[in-house]
Image (cartoon, rainbow, N blue to C red; front, side, top):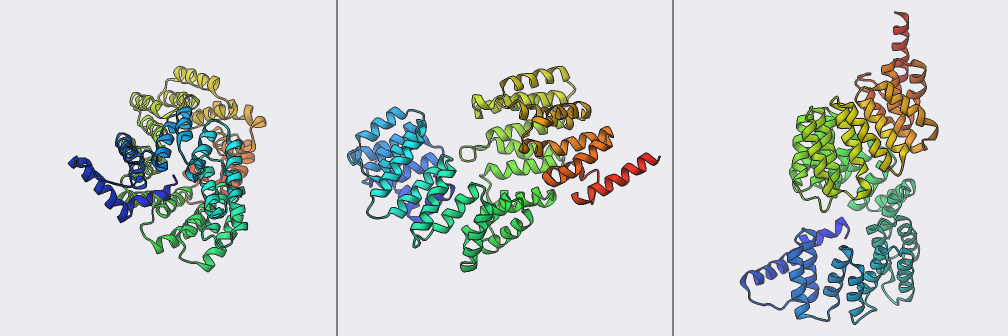
Length: 480
């Protein structure tokens, strides 16, 4: 279910239905309710991490409506989410109306979860072609399936089809723009969105997608303007508030970002995302006690919707380490295991290594780094992460040595990550020819990280001015 689908639960009609059901449960007096109403209530409970109540609700629905499609599909999906696709398939096949669209989508999801996405997409497209009516609605739901399971290329293919074949479908522009942004085709999305906003200047969805497309291009100043337009329409719009804060963050305007995150938290206190991002902001400002406070609050929240548990633990451990609280930092990392998969856990060794290194325990650090390298599926990025950790711990010679060994084998994307730290290490090693080789590339290819690292060295200067300032500084040093 997409984030914007949750708005259904805020509607008065649903709230009245939910209240009627809960009054029935509390009073113990059975009341007739439709299968779709009871399934909506069960969905609400699941979204709010109240699974036991959801299953009781769906059991009641099936006791009243044993052959109803919606409760059966809901039950099958719960087994599917728990990894029991065979049980889900058995329930699915027991549904009387196998041609029901919800049953078709259930079959497709089971296939995707079994690693048979091609069969799932074939099933959906065959069904689409056979429909006599509401093909556009069905195709839009197919795109949602692609969104839910990160098949963005297929989603874009179908979004283009929706746009071309159904000119009267009201949301076709927004659906296509959304999928274009997800696929990184931001210029094409911007062309669509500019046209849409010329015709419908108060289209909130278009403004929000415009901010995402501009951020995707790294154009944070214009994204900030777009977020302000969205907030002029609705001053409490959740996504626009976060985008505005994030733009300030990426523009290295940390005070403004922090203030915006605080405003967001006031309006959306149940969202761990705001606290987490503010914690990152405070880390960047080196206000580590405040960062710890925000991240500790975020860690105690429910991460079901955001999936941020692991990142919160990692950043909290990082902030605690900066305060010299290595033992507490390591304890927080252990807690992060509950949010990881086996494939993620080598990252824990990297952070453990950083904590040990930062707190003067080099032998322990190198042991953890070696374990991380052995577990990693991409040794290049793992060694690069180790080099960055060494740079942050002021081991500039070791950091530069690792990155020099890696440089010829790094991908373009990995080199973009490395360049600012290479320049930073060379600066402190006073290896001026290497520094002057890397700094212009760092400014060009990774302006944001370069500005973060070098703004304390060159206060008040724009990244484009770093080169000239650096050369003047070097000449002064050589002339002494």
